Each structure stands twice: as C-alpha cells, then as structure tokens.
Image (cartoon, rainbow, N blue to C red; front, top):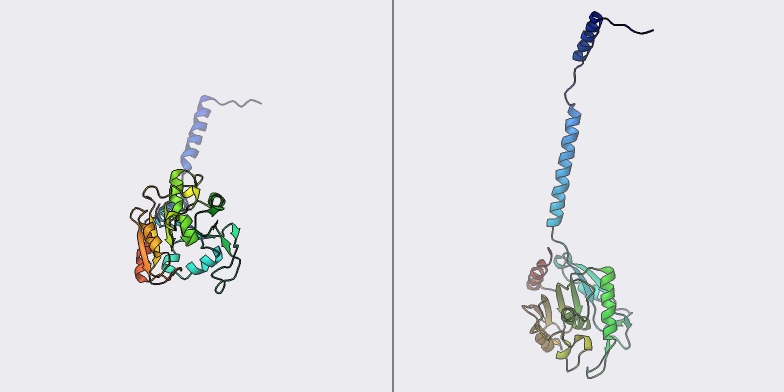
Length: 271
C-alpha cells in the first residue's frame, strides 16, 4: 500500500526530523584522541632529534690493518691492543692476514704463536720483489668485499704497502675499485726506493710527486729503519709524527702521543 502524506503531514514530518537532528549533539574531539595525536607528533620529533644526534656523533674511522713481515693479523691485533682505550675506542680496526705463508723463520716466534704470513718476497739486495702485484690485488679485493674502509694502517712490511697505496691509487695502477684512501697510519715504515735501490713495478711512481694523503708516522729512535722512515716523511704533505724511544716495534702510546693521535683521528670522524 502506498504511503500518502499531505502537505500538512509532510510539514509535521519534516519538523520532527529537524527536531531529531538538532537533538543529536556532536561531541567535541575526545581527550584520548588529542593525547594520542600529540604523542604521535612528539614521537616523530623524537625520531628526528635522534637521527640528528646520530648523524652528529663522530663515527669511528674504519681502518684496514696490514701486519709486519712473517707475523699475522692476529699478532698485529694483540700488539695494537696495548694502545689505550682512549684511542682504540675511537677506531674500527680490521686485521687482515697476508696471502702467503711465511717461507722462513719468524722473528716473533718467541713471543707469538703461528701461523705466520708475508705480503711479498724479495731478494737480498732488494732489487726484485715477488708476488707484490698479487698481494695488492688480494688487499683490494678484500677492501671491495668487506669495505668501505677510510684508511690503512701498516707496520713494517705492511707499512711499506700502506705508504705506497695512496700514490698507486692516484696513478690508477691499484686500488681503482675502492673509494679514495683518506689517510694512512705508518708504523716503522719506509718507501721502497728509500730501502736500498729496488721497488716493485706497481710502486715505481707511487712517490713521484708529493703524496697529498694525510699521514701519521710512528718512528722509533732505535729502529734500524729510522733513517728510511725520515726519508718517507719527505714524500708526504704535512705528515704528523709520533716518536718513541724503542726500536722496530709497535710501541705503547704515551700521553703526548695520545694527544697527537687523537687530534689526527678527529679529522676523519665526521667524513
């Protein structure tokens, strides 16, 4: 049956509907909704603040460490481990074993257990270097796989390589697959040409011009390589130096040395 509504009835129906609509009170936003929105906003601000703080905290420079002749990454780690926490706590150190097992007696056998490794071999008068190119390729492949690294640290034979690396990279003959080496830390190091007369082919032009890469040199007053280490200083622009009273070794770092090293490290914490 059809519903019929006359004009008067329609008016009454309309008035009734309007009354019901007006009777419905739209509540203001509930307090817990406002609080939740405020909390979300504050959380967002907090995340942003934390992000800014994280970006502002100095990062630890990542350093690939190259051990000395016929030792190992583990041995170098123990030697470096004697440095104060004020230094070690600011560095991210990665210790790599050389690719070639030692072919002879190690000078550290009385102090550290094997295995022992060497980066390359040479003849007695240092005019020929064997496996140098293979060793450089091995280091670069490791840097590609496990990097990026900010800098290199080397001791003795490892320092020879670390010292020549920025120059080889600048010449485009090595380390072309990795980011620019930002700095080097050289302990008891020298350059190949300075040690008698030989040098590996890859490193022929490594020191042909002043090395712009920032460098920290740790030199022993009684090191048999001291003179060659002083020659190495001349190849770098504005080298930083820490001297110690020991010989061909990784020394403990005294208070003055700590200040020098921390000042050097600080330059690379925000890069």
